[in-house]
Length: 438
Ligand code: ADP
Ligand code: ASP
Ligand code: MG
Image (tube, rainbow, N blue to C red; front, side, top):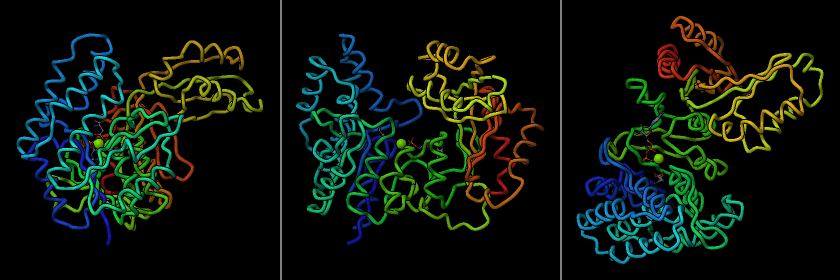
């Protein structure tokens, strides 16, 4: 039988009514056999996610202070959910052991994982499905990387024996037996791992929007829904800030070609976005726009730099030695600039600058902070002309200063750097200019 893996995000499981919607979606198609769940998210814009409350408990406990406030809030939310769904689960015992851990040996990843764990226990009981713990099926290596071979094999064997199952998202286990979480939003990765392990014919990711939008809906009014997108384009957009799907979630499924379908729990009849290896949309030039704030450019100048063998490599290595990956690296003849995350750079700023002075003896080094990067992404740009010019012209007409330009080698993206203060406006200007190409 075909199997579909479904993952529901936090807003799709925020309360009893939302969980009922999710359950109805699962029950409406017998192929939807494996369900990955997030912790309960926000019920409205003023609410707090359970995961955020758990992180609060951890930081209070780590200081040795009283965490009972946020912990009782979490307890109350789960009690309300269990009661509303008429599920009997010994929540008292569960919260006793969380409280004990917080008091005796607070561990951030363990505490953060309890939102997914408890939600999965309740939803498994409600659906009458087996509960499969990531403690026994998702493995990290000593250096914190996913142990793919072991995970796909063990998870695959476990699920092959079960007609249906619910699996908590967001975490797995280290070789020494302690829990480790993915980065925030990581339940998307768990969904992808499960899809790969059972060789699903589709991975459905259910959220609160009707698919990947061609721009951030909090900035652009009513952006177009992207019906189809390639894994590569999606990765570019999510890496650059389109937060609908975790940027690493495509890796487990891409190599084996399992498509991801982003769907809306509140509008299940909408087809959503299909992410696959081909986009199937002839003629589209631009697929979407995404961006982020929080970058700095470090510009290094030295005359005859172009003749100095290994200069660029050495410069990038200095950043690497301090654990700062570079995002972009636009160059001039006697000038090289390295665009990095501002926070990462600032954490070793003095050491990096000192190393650059000592090892590269530059004529000048300057730091340009407050940079936002915007990516315009589209496989179609490689075979069409004039898109970059239109974008630059529109920004100039809106009197937005472009501080940096970069284009990927495959012509899949055009990246512009602007001042953070201009970010939202620049996204709107670029969207208005390129909407007709989408
Ligand atoms: P979930 O809790 O289901 O995992 P997320 O909050 O992680 O949901 O992701 C969905 C949210 O991503 C949307 O509500 C939307 O505000 C935001 N978002 C940002 N950029 C985009 C985009 N390009 N397309 C769709 N949603 C986006
Ligand atoms: N609950 C986790 C978070 O808020 C993981 C997820 O929702 O994907 O980041
Ligand atoms: Mg998410």
